[in-house]
Length: 295
Image 1 (spheres, rainbow, N blue to C red):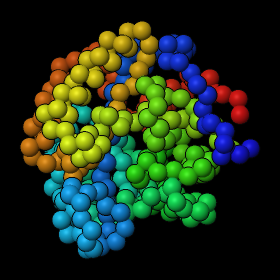
Image 2 (cartoon, rainbow, N blue to C red):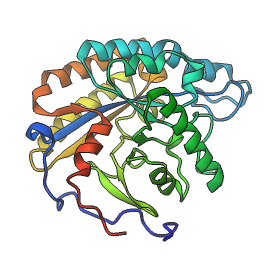
Image 3 (cartoon, helix red, strand yellow):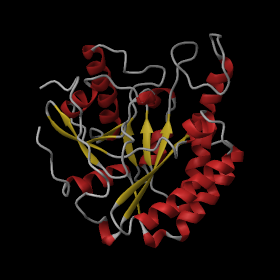
């Protein structure tokens, strides 16, 4: 079966879904995804703080590199302070380029999910063979270092081809974070069987919000708090998932950390009212509850 022109999932209004609960009867699941990305100096794509036509792009490369040298460690301290579990989204090149970064999160029991090979590239323009090789290479690196194959995948730049879900399912992935079209997990159809889409935020995301739309750190923090409070109210009627997406080179900047601390204090004060967890745990729980759609 080809999914080139066939939707991966069918329309389903959020008000007409099967009801279930998260562990301990909780109705809202919250997870924090921390992106730690690796770029290549003088080649390929890079996230831009300011536009630059130059190569090597010293300004933007060094800004991104701040995330692995400083930002990620400050964020780790903050996660420890508030006892926040993390889904760490890593480019596989990070293991060689920045030894010790992933180790620090593994040691505290965090989930290590795959974010491709490097953010210097995107999958969307690749051939099927090239994308298959990329997925296998990145997955093998994580398996070598973590002792098991990763369960979750986020494509660099959220870039997919028509084959991506099929290739991920064939490679043994249980869930993907590329799709932001819901507040509940849902099944994607692939040529090899179902693949779970766990909601990943493009609004509560420091890259699209702070860098893409030039919003302040205070505004971004307010967005997270307001979204949490509203979803906690909505979750009385049905189970919901709220993700928070951070990038080490953005939210790891000192002036943004102070606002993120305010967010985490707000979440901590209401910890008994929701399930604070990791994306993989959400996928594991809901996979046993959601009916699998017909292929």
